[in-house]
Length: 473
Ligand SMILES: Cc1cc2nc3c(=O)[nH]c(=O)nc-3n(C[C@H](O)[C@H](O)[C@H](O)COP(=O)(O)OP(=O)(O)OC[C@H]3O[C@@H](n4cnc5c(N)ncnc54)[C@H](O)[C@@H]3O)c2cc1C
Image 1: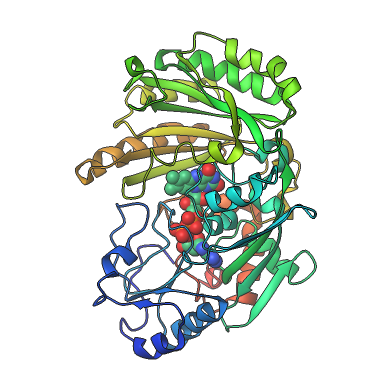
Image 2: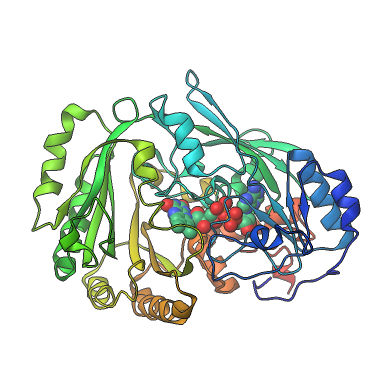
């Protein structure tokens, strides 16, 4: 299904019957909290679901799934609500909102954490970093665990410990027929394979269990940005593309183009200046840090060297305040195998035209431990990706929606010929089925098979959809 397809099934259903079955509130359009409940992180998304169920437990989830099935309703699932394409809500749909399910259970001895599906990464890091460990996640605290994990999960720990899905041990799932299963490497292994990158196509995950790893010194890492003038972009990118593969996996860094935020700790004289930057994160023993970090501190003529010791969860939430919920977002993405000279020219051109202070471009490394996992081992298909790139137009003012979208689309169009062809599904907008297939590459047919087995009627279709009937169409 294209994301722009009209909803199928009735727009109304006996919601009072559903409300009577739920422990959590069911918020319909006449409810005073409806406008707040229908909102997602990206304020460019303005959809009107027919009801939002703030579920209380797995039984509430099951009731919603069975109700949507019985009445032929569109069904949207919301974890952290961060999906830029707005897949956590849908016009006319019943939304299962998991955001009140926020509990975590850590086992410091077994190095695991069990996480409810409404948690954000800030919830998880808070629970684990105090025990000196973390599971690979992303680069922000406010992103939802559920959507990020089900798409793959790319973050500071990817080089050293793999994607988030490479650290997923099991998931509890409510299937379209209302049954509850735990999928892991030996039970429902096909479902477990598909959940590790295939998104919300197969069921509603109610909790995840992840492997954790000791990091830094008792969870304290050495991290922060090193920023250069935007005019240095080509020099910095050329240096970075050679340096990164030579570094030990304890040290990772994503590169980006940005505007220096007008806020401390950045020096006031640099506020609003366009920059090329790398945010480094070193998770190894601190007695080796200075020797390794000297080369990244000393290269070129940095405007800012913000490297310092900090608990990993402080790093993870460092950019949350700069990107609060309610901004306009439009992004475009691709994997890139190499940062070619041709690509660098495009970055130079469009980086100089960053349209607003929040707009940015990031490239996240997919190498090290993530690249050692075979492409067919999980549904996530770009193990040889090199970097996951994303061009992000952001602004608080809806009047700038066109400006930021146009910049992102034009930048992407210029850069796409230098890419690996597909994008990280969690960075896709509504770009059509071909883009979804390009992102799953050779794994797409197997995803279709699993979809046919677990969700043949495509109940779970408000997502980057694996269409079970595609072959026949
Ligand atoms: C500011 C920002 C920063 C980001 N940073 C990163 C990053 O560092 N690394 C990275 O990998 N990605 C990152 N992303 C992308 C992010 O992974 C996706 O946007 C992801 O969809 C967010 O998950 P969510 O639970 O918050 O989303 P939601 O909007 O709640 O859900 C997105 C989709 O996921 C599915 N889904 C959600 N919950 C469930 C569930 N419990 N069971 C089944 N399906 C479910 C549904 O199909 C849903 O439509 C970022 C996004 C933003 C906006």
